Image 1 (cartoon, rainbow, N blue to C red):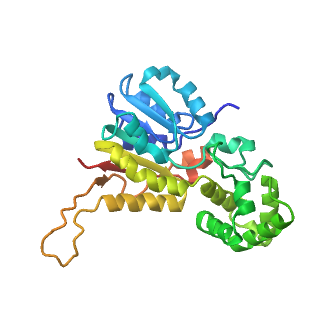
Image 2 (cartoon, one colour):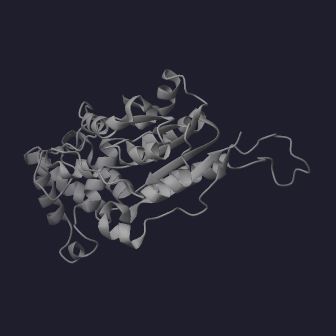
Image 3 (cartoon, rainbow, N blue to C red):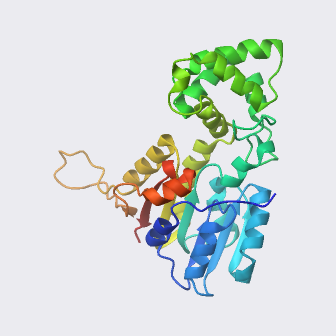
Amino acid sequence: MVFHHIPVLLHQVLEVLQPRSEGIYLDGTVGGGGHSAAILAKMAGRGRLIGLDQDPAALAAAGRNLAPFGDQVTLVRSNFRRVGAVADELGLTGKIDGILLDIGVSSHQLDEAERGFTYRTDAPLDMRMNPESALTAAKLLNEAPEGEIARILRDYGEERWAKRIAQFIANRRAEKLLERTGELVDIIRAAIPAGARQEGGHPAKRTFQALRIAVNDELGALEEALPAALGALAPGGRLVVISFHSLEDRMVKNFFAEQARGCLCPPDFPVCVCGNQPKVKIITRKPLVGSDEEMEANPRAQSAKLRAAEKVG
Protein backbone atom coordinates (compact mmCIF):
# COMPACT_ATOMS: atom_id res chain seq x y z
CA MET A 1 0.00 0.00 0.00
CA VAL A 2 1.19 3.53 -0.82
CA PHE A 3 1.91 5.49 2.35
CA HIS A 4 -0.68 8.26 2.48
CA HIS A 5 -0.17 11.02 5.03
CA ILE A 6 -1.40 14.60 4.94
CA PRO A 7 0.83 16.81 7.10
CA VAL A 8 -1.38 18.59 9.61
CA LEU A 9 -0.97 22.30 10.48
CA LEU A 10 1.84 22.56 7.92
CA HIS A 11 1.63 26.36 7.54
CA GLN A 12 1.68 26.83 11.31
CA VAL A 13 4.66 24.47 11.71
CA LEU A 14 6.76 26.43 9.21
CA GLU A 15 5.67 29.78 10.66
CA VAL A 16 6.71 28.79 14.19
CA LEU A 17 9.75 26.65 13.38
CA GLN A 18 11.23 29.25 11.00
CA PRO A 19 13.69 26.91 9.24
CA ARG A 20 16.90 28.63 8.20
CA SER A 21 19.07 27.60 5.28
CA GLU A 22 21.97 26.05 7.18
CA GLY A 23 20.10 24.80 10.22
CA ILE A 24 19.76 21.34 11.71
CA TYR A 25 16.21 20.08 12.26
CA LEU A 26 14.77 16.90 13.70
CA ASP A 27 11.35 15.48 12.89
CA GLY A 28 10.66 13.03 15.70
CA THR A 29 7.60 11.55 13.97
CA VAL A 30 8.56 11.72 10.30
CA GLY A 31 5.67 9.62 8.95
CA GLY A 32 5.60 9.90 5.17
CA GLY A 33 7.87 12.95 5.29
CA GLY A 34 5.30 15.68 4.60
CA HIS A 35 6.45 18.09 7.29
CA SER A 36 10.09 17.18 6.67
CA ALA A 37 9.88 17.87 2.93
CA ALA A 38 8.46 21.33 3.60
CA ILE A 39 11.21 22.07 6.14
CA LEU A 40 13.89 20.90 3.70
CA ALA A 41 12.42 23.02 0.91
CA LYS A 42 12.81 26.09 3.13
CA MET A 43 16.51 25.27 3.60
CA ALA A 44 17.20 25.68 -0.14
CA GLY A 45 19.60 22.78 -0.58
CA ARG A 46 21.54 23.35 2.60
CA GLY A 47 21.13 22.32 6.21
CA ARG A 48 20.31 18.88 7.59
CA LEU A 49 17.20 17.00 8.66
CA ILE A 50 17.01 13.98 10.97
CA GLY A 51 13.81 11.95 10.70
CA LEU A 52 12.69 9.43 13.35
CA ASP A 53 9.87 6.90 13.17
CA GLN A 54 9.25 3.54 14.82
CA ASP A 55 7.05 2.34 11.94
CA PRO A 56 9.16 0.69 9.19
CA ALA A 57 6.46 1.40 6.58
CA ALA A 58 6.58 5.09 7.45
CA LEU A 59 10.37 5.16 7.35
CA ALA A 60 10.44 3.47 3.94
CA ALA A 61 7.91 5.99 2.61
CA ALA A 62 9.90 8.89 4.06
CA GLY A 63 13.01 7.52 2.36
CA ARG A 64 11.25 7.55 -1.01
CA ASN A 65 9.59 10.94 -0.56
CA LEU A 66 12.71 12.67 0.77
CA ALA A 67 15.14 11.06 -1.70
CA PRO A 68 15.38 14.28 -3.81
CA PHE A 69 17.07 15.98 -0.85
CA GLY A 70 19.94 13.47 -0.91
CA ASP A 71 22.44 13.48 1.92
CA GLN A 72 20.69 16.34 3.69
CA VAL A 73 18.45 13.66 5.20
CA THR A 74 19.27 11.08 7.88
CA LEU A 75 16.50 8.62 8.78
CA VAL A 76 16.56 6.62 12.00
CA ARG A 77 14.15 3.91 13.08
CA SER A 78 13.32 4.91 16.63
CA ASN A 79 10.47 5.96 18.88
CA PHE A 80 10.48 9.72 19.43
CA ARG A 81 10.94 9.09 23.16
CA ARG A 82 14.61 8.38 22.26
CA VAL A 83 15.16 11.78 20.68
CA GLY A 84 17.89 12.62 23.20
CA ALA A 85 19.71 9.33 22.68
CA VAL A 86 19.55 9.71 18.89
CA ALA A 87 20.93 13.24 19.13
CA ASP A 88 23.79 11.89 21.28
CA GLU A 89 24.52 9.07 18.84
CA LEU A 90 24.73 11.54 15.95
CA GLY A 91 26.85 14.02 17.90
CA LEU A 92 24.13 16.68 17.69
CA THR A 93 23.20 17.28 21.34
CA GLY A 94 22.93 21.01 21.91
CA LYS A 95 23.23 21.72 18.17
CA ILE A 96 19.71 21.17 16.80
CA ASP A 97 17.85 24.32 15.68
CA GLY A 98 14.35 22.88 15.73
CA ILE A 99 12.49 19.73 16.74
CA LEU A 100 8.98 18.77 15.60
CA LEU A 101 6.84 16.13 17.31
CA ASP A 102 3.55 15.29 15.56
CA ILE A 103 1.97 12.94 18.12
CA GLY A 104 -0.62 10.30 17.33
CA VAL A 105 -1.70 7.94 14.58
CA SER A 106 -1.06 8.80 10.93
CA SER A 107 -3.53 8.78 8.05
CA HIS A 108 -1.72 5.77 6.58
CA GLN A 109 -1.93 3.74 9.78
CA LEU A 110 -5.68 4.37 9.91
CA ASP A 111 -6.07 3.48 6.22
CA GLU A 112 -4.08 0.24 6.56
CA ALA A 113 -6.98 -1.87 7.85
CA GLU A 114 -4.93 -4.90 8.90
CA ARG A 115 -3.14 -2.79 11.54
CA GLY A 116 -6.37 -2.65 13.56
CA PHE A 117 -6.39 1.09 14.32
CA THR A 118 -9.85 1.76 12.93
CA TYR A 119 -13.29 0.66 14.08
CA ARG A 120 -14.64 1.00 10.54
CA THR A 121 -13.08 -2.22 9.18
CA ASP A 122 -12.93 -5.71 10.68
CA ALA A 123 -9.27 -6.62 11.26
CA PRO A 124 -6.95 -8.20 13.84
CA LEU A 125 -6.88 -6.35 17.18
CA ASP A 126 -3.34 -5.03 16.78
CA MET A 127 -2.92 -1.21 17.01
CA ARG A 128 0.89 -1.31 17.27
CA MET A 129 2.78 1.57 15.68
CA ASN A 130 5.91 -0.53 16.04
CA PRO A 131 4.98 -3.98 14.64
CA GLU A 132 7.77 -5.57 16.69
CA SER A 133 6.30 -4.50 20.04
CA ALA A 134 5.05 -7.31 22.26
CA LEU A 135 1.82 -5.65 23.40
CA THR A 136 -1.16 -5.71 21.03
CA ALA A 137 -4.69 -4.52 21.66
CA ALA A 138 -5.81 -8.17 21.76
CA LYS A 139 -3.24 -9.02 24.42
CA LEU A 140 -4.25 -6.04 26.52
CA LEU A 141 -7.97 -6.76 26.28
CA ASN A 142 -7.60 -10.49 26.94
CA GLU A 143 -5.11 -10.27 29.83
CA ALA A 144 -5.51 -6.94 31.65
CA PRO A 145 -7.73 -6.86 34.76
CA GLU A 146 -11.22 -5.53 34.17
CA GLY A 147 -10.52 -2.52 36.39
CA GLU A 148 -7.40 -1.62 34.40
CA ILE A 149 -9.34 -1.74 31.14
CA ALA A 150 -11.97 0.56 32.65
CA ARG A 151 -9.25 2.98 33.79
CA ILE A 152 -7.68 3.07 30.32
CA LEU A 153 -11.01 3.77 28.62
CA ARG A 154 -11.89 6.44 31.18
CA ASP A 155 -8.52 8.21 31.35
CA TYR A 156 -7.33 7.93 27.75
CA GLY A 157 -10.66 7.91 25.93
CA GLU A 158 -12.77 10.00 28.29
CA GLU A 159 -15.37 7.27 27.82
CA ARG A 160 -18.47 7.80 29.96
CA TRP A 161 -19.35 4.10 29.79
CA ALA A 162 -15.83 2.81 30.52
CA LYS A 163 -16.80 0.61 33.45
CA ARG A 164 -19.70 -0.99 31.61
CA ILE A 165 -17.66 -1.59 28.43
CA ALA A 166 -14.86 -3.18 30.51
CA GLN A 167 -17.42 -5.44 32.19
CA PHE A 168 -18.82 -6.57 28.82
CA ILE A 169 -15.28 -7.22 27.56
CA ALA A 170 -14.49 -9.34 30.63
CA ASN A 171 -17.70 -11.33 30.19
CA ARG A 172 -17.00 -11.99 26.50
CA ARG A 173 -13.35 -13.04 26.96
CA ALA A 174 -14.42 -15.52 29.64
CA GLU A 175 -16.20 -17.38 26.84
CA LYS A 176 -13.87 -16.61 23.91
CA LEU A 177 -10.73 -14.51 23.61
CA LEU A 178 -11.09 -11.34 21.56
CA GLU A 179 -9.21 -11.35 18.25
CA ARG A 180 -10.94 -8.94 15.85
CA THR A 181 -11.84 -5.25 15.83
CA GLY A 182 -15.35 -6.18 14.67
CA GLU A 183 -15.87 -8.23 17.82
CA LEU A 184 -14.84 -5.29 19.97
CA VAL A 185 -17.17 -2.91 18.11
CA ASP A 186 -20.07 -5.32 18.71
CA ILE A 187 -19.23 -5.46 22.44
CA ILE A 188 -19.11 -1.66 22.67
CA ARG A 189 -22.45 -1.32 20.89
CA ALA A 190 -24.00 -3.81 23.31
CA ALA A 191 -22.50 -2.11 26.36
CA ILE A 192 -23.54 1.47 25.57
CA PRO A 193 -27.27 2.15 25.99
CA ALA A 194 -29.13 2.82 22.75
CA GLY A 195 -29.85 6.46 23.60
CA ALA A 196 -26.20 7.22 24.35
CA ARG A 197 -25.05 5.60 21.10
CA GLN A 198 -26.68 8.43 19.18
CA GLU A 199 -24.35 11.04 20.71
CA GLY A 200 -20.78 12.05 19.87
CA GLY A 201 -20.09 10.13 16.67
CA HIS A 202 -19.25 6.43 16.39
CA PRO A 203 -19.71 4.67 19.76
CA ALA A 204 -16.33 2.88 19.42
CA LYS A 205 -14.29 6.01 18.70
CA ARG A 206 -13.25 6.76 22.28
CA THR A 207 -12.47 3.13 23.15
CA PHE A 208 -10.25 2.67 20.09
CA GLN A 209 -8.41 5.91 20.84
CA ALA A 210 -7.82 4.86 24.43
CA LEU A 211 -6.53 1.41 23.47
CA ARG A 212 -4.17 2.85 20.86
CA ILE A 213 -2.70 5.27 23.41
CA ALA A 214 -2.24 2.44 25.92
CA VAL A 215 -0.81 -0.10 23.47
CA ASN A 216 1.81 2.38 22.24
CA ASP A 217 2.44 4.07 25.60
CA GLU A 218 1.98 7.41 23.86
CA LEU A 219 1.74 9.49 27.02
CA GLY A 220 4.81 7.83 28.52
CA ALA A 221 6.73 8.45 25.31
CA LEU A 222 5.75 12.13 25.28
CA GLU A 223 6.68 12.55 28.94
CA GLU A 224 10.19 11.24 28.18
CA ALA A 225 10.54 13.07 24.86
CA LEU A 226 9.84 16.61 26.03
CA PRO A 227 12.84 17.09 28.37
CA ALA A 228 15.05 15.04 26.05
CA ALA A 229 14.14 17.23 23.07
CA LEU A 230 14.78 20.40 25.06
CA GLY A 231 18.22 19.08 26.01
CA ALA A 232 19.05 18.33 22.37
CA LEU A 233 18.23 21.85 21.16
CA ALA A 234 20.79 24.58 20.59
CA PRO A 235 20.23 27.89 22.41
CA GLY A 236 17.51 29.66 20.44
CA GLY A 237 16.27 26.35 19.03
CA ARG A 238 12.54 25.71 18.93
CA LEU A 239 10.46 22.75 20.07
CA VAL A 240 7.14 22.36 18.24
CA VAL A 241 4.56 19.78 19.37
CA ILE A 242 1.30 18.86 17.65
CA SER A 243 -1.08 16.89 19.85
CA PHE A 244 -4.53 15.42 19.25
CA HIS A 245 -5.72 14.58 22.75
CA SER A 246 -6.48 16.81 25.74
CA LEU A 247 -4.12 14.80 28.00
CA GLU A 248 -1.24 15.26 25.54
CA ASP A 249 -1.94 18.96 25.08
CA ARG A 250 -2.11 19.49 28.84
CA MET A 251 1.20 17.67 29.28
CA VAL A 252 2.89 19.91 26.70
CA LYS A 253 1.33 23.07 28.12
CA ASN A 254 2.42 22.23 31.67
CA PHE A 255 5.94 21.25 30.60
CA PHE A 256 6.46 24.53 28.75
CA ALA A 257 5.04 26.52 31.67
CA GLU A 258 7.34 24.76 34.13
CA GLN A 259 10.41 25.31 31.95
CA ALA A 260 9.50 28.98 31.44
CA ARG A 261 9.45 29.71 35.18
CA GLY A 262 12.17 31.87 36.69
CA CYS A 263 12.56 32.23 40.45
CA LEU A 264 11.15 29.31 42.46
CA CYS A 265 11.53 30.95 45.88
CA PRO A 266 8.48 31.35 48.13
CA PRO A 267 6.63 34.62 47.39
CA ASP A 268 7.48 36.05 50.82
CA PHE A 269 11.27 35.89 50.20
CA PRO A 270 12.61 39.46 49.86
CA VAL A 271 15.26 38.41 47.29
CA CYS A 272 15.79 35.38 45.08
CA VAL A 273 18.12 32.78 46.56
CA CYS A 274 17.36 29.84 44.23
CA GLY A 275 19.02 31.30 41.15
CA ASN A 276 16.65 29.46 38.84
CA GLN A 277 16.45 30.90 35.34
CA PRO A 278 13.80 30.27 32.64
CA LYS A 279 14.88 27.52 30.24
CA VAL A 280 12.39 28.37 27.51
CA LYS A 281 10.39 31.26 26.12
CA ILE A 282 6.87 30.21 25.19
CA ILE A 283 6.05 31.11 21.57
CA THR A 284 2.38 30.11 21.57
CA ARG A 285 0.47 31.48 24.55
CA LYS A 286 -2.58 29.69 23.16
CA PRO A 287 -2.38 26.58 20.98
CA LEU A 288 -2.54 27.09 17.22
CA VAL A 289 -5.28 25.19 15.41
CA GLY A 290 -6.19 24.52 11.80
CA SER A 291 -8.22 26.82 9.59
CA ASP A 292 -11.80 25.95 8.73
CA GLU A 293 -10.63 24.98 5.24
CA GLU A 294 -7.98 22.58 6.58
CA MET A 295 -10.36 20.99 9.06
CA GLU A 296 -12.84 20.35 6.28
CA ALA A 297 -10.18 18.93 3.94
CA ASN A 298 -8.33 16.89 6.57
CA PRO A 299 -10.38 15.37 9.43
CA ARG A 300 -7.18 14.73 11.39
CA ALA A 301 -6.74 18.50 11.74
CA GLN A 302 -10.00 18.89 13.64
CA SER A 303 -8.48 17.96 17.00
CA ALA A 304 -4.91 19.11 16.31
CA LYS A 305 -3.28 21.68 18.60
CA LEU A 306 0.21 23.12 18.15
CA ARG A 307 2.35 24.52 20.95
CA ALA A 308 5.89 25.82 20.64
CA ALA A 309 8.69 27.12 22.85
CA GLU A 310 12.19 28.48 22.23
CA LYS A 311 15.17 27.34 24.29
CA VAL A 312 16.80 30.17 26.19
CA GLY A 313 20.57 30.31 25.81
